[in-house]
Amino acid sequence: MDVPTNQFKQWLSQRRQPAPLGTWMMTGSAAVAEALGYVGFDYLVLDTEHVPVDQLDVGHILRALAGTPTREVLLRLPWNDAVAVKRALDAGAQSLMFPFIQTAEEARRAVAAARYPQDGNGGTRGVAAVHRASRYGAIGDYLRQANAQTCVVLQLETPEAVARMPEIAAVDGVDAIFIGPADLSANMGHLGGITHPEVQAALRQAVQSCTALGKPCGIVGGNPDLVGTYLEWGYAFVAIASDMSMLLARAREQIAAVRGRKLAIAGGAGY
Image (cartoon, rainbow, N blue to C red; front, side):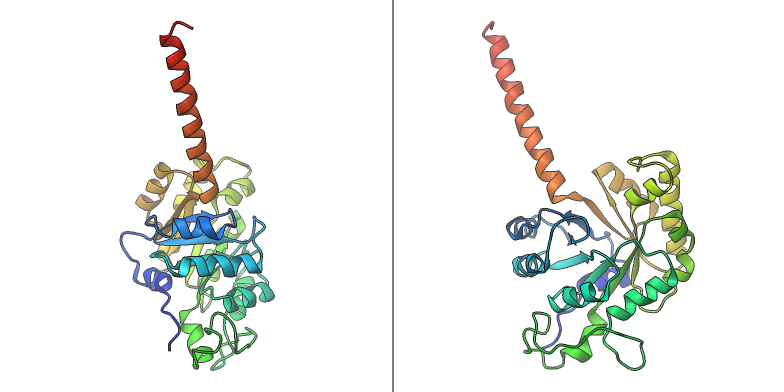
């Protein structure tokens, strides 16, 4: 038995078209994740930075998705922390997003934590033989195969980090860059202003710079119009909204429809 092929990593390296489309998972619900796995997304972003998703939740969600057409998960870590990296990989995640990377040194630390020590690569990932990633030891050669299937995505969220993109992207083992529009806008002085012209100009420049460096660049947008714009600009993988925002939007839509219908009936009856 071999380590499963990381299709998400392959898509990035091959610059797959159409660009892979995902969404953020913030509910922490394995049932919601499983349902999303049948909707048609190419991948899902499992957030453990801003939501109370713990290690047991990660395992449950990865298991729920394993039987769906959308098996590719990009797990956003809570921080650039070697212990968090080790636990996520041992749980079976193959693609990791590291938040708030600011320097090439931080990038090297992230890559090292995601790699087993092998052939002088500087890896520091701790070794365990029996865990979900190795199919509890059933993948006999897991330790030697794992590095090749691990994908490292670094999230840049400040103007300073974006300015350092050339040296960050040049770190060996970095598979892709992800621009965080919310934090970038905040750190540009436009808190909550992702669509501010200065922020949008910075996002466009960022993907152009990243593409010129030969690295795929990803982003998230809150609605189809924004995501469509990002794709036109050349973003190589995108996410749209989140499970929570889509749930709330649909709930509001249904409430408005029912209340509007009742008002129409009341008006027609002369009330």
